[in-house]
Image (spheres, rainbow, N blue to C red):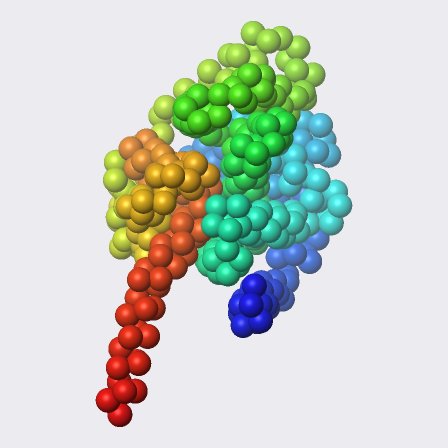
Length: 380
């Protein structure tokens, strides 16, 4: 990089660090308060998950996951009895945060920093441009939804981290085939963290690219896929302690899928959410998205433009990222309620592709601007 570009790069890095530091300091109580299992246990006991409609106020997802993490990690509880809807790994990690820091949210800082670092290296791999890479990270670092997840014990942030790590290592494996096993490891961790029904279609999508472009790694890829169910089973070890039967495990998963089949679907709701900041909630009411800002529709729109660029058709890593982004957007469009957090896993991808589109347009505009300026100087 030239000296000017280095200054710009470090300036953006300082902005990212300062912005994150200010956010943490102004919300330090979320990271310093001591976890209180007694009060949270009472809240869960009197919640909608235990006493149903008689519950007053209920318990939010963050409280539910925090209680489940404590219950799994400290009390070695049966994972099928508390929050069976999602796999247990993310909640075990919440329990680990409580064990190490006496707080359920501190581990989110680790996730967030690792996500920013991984996004930078993914952008560098896709664009070979350090300025585009650091700009992509800066956009991600000020995303209001991601920042909100820093102060809540949710599953979406670790899921997003594992998702992006899986994509990054997959792209790296195109040069070093053995890394495909690391990629499958991260896919397995993502699958063991949060309910993720489109993992199989994604793996088929990646298989398609391998067959078309990298047949030499086909055998390694197929073998690596065995890692995913292995990690999923290992994360359920405590289930087998309480229910030492594979038949019971399969029944439990069928039960979990049945629960999700009852979830409402609102086709196209995510696009209303993206472009207006309002969406129809599961109760059928039009509500405002508190984490929405005008950057969201701009970034999503820009992330879809690279498909029109000729270079994209000749660059396999960019194509993989672009189509994965599009694939997940289509899934959220047709098979979910359209809540914004469902597209969190592709936020790093949309940030990279959006900045890449801006740089593409800048390369067109910049020469024109220079010509106009030079002509104006001649006339004067």
